[in-house]
Image (cartoon, rainbow, N blue to C red; front, side, top):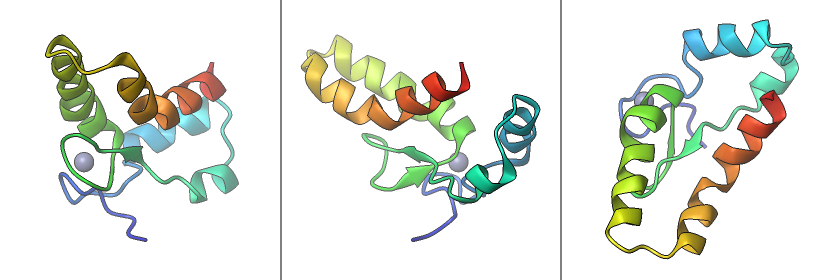
Length: 88
Ligand SMILES: [Zn+2]
């Protein structure tokens, strides 16, 4: 298991995201287990939040427009949506 983003090579949890999560009440203990985001379909592996927002999510939206079944998109977005729900 690598703790580096498979797209940019940076830390899976970038400093800005870590600070934001802590500010929102997520414990440092929980953040130790941060596994990043599923990088598909851009890459096979885990990616940091900035790469997820800038590359992975737009790529998925493009795939949706290209006719990818909604279920496949939900499978790929599962972890991302769970984390967002926990934060809200
Ligand atoms: Zn990255």
